[in-house]
Image (cartoon, rainbow, N blue to C red; front, side, top):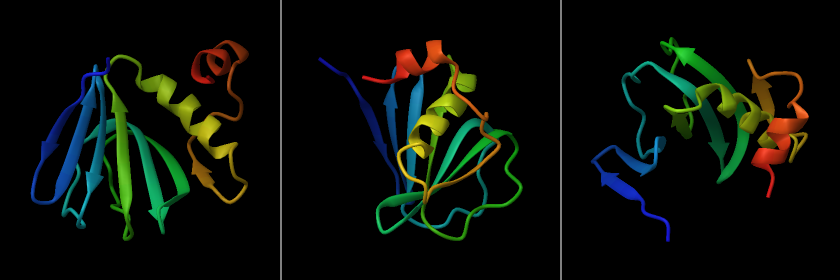
Length: 110
């Protein structure tokens, strides 16, 4: 059984599982809190760009996006971003490692 906590707000939806949090913004926020994690840019329900961010966000994307954080393993999210980017050559990336270590890839792949 998987237990999720979902927080519905006027401008965003937060989905929490253990120490991971996925935030979906329904409208453009004025600011974002500092975080270490992935910023997933989307267009027509497809990921178009993956950025790994550490700390303060200086520029908020113009289009739709999601944030993914993990308090227990923030550095692992960069490798998850790499694995997601490997699924399509159309996905742009910034600040992700060049290669996923073999022991991380084994843990993250089904």
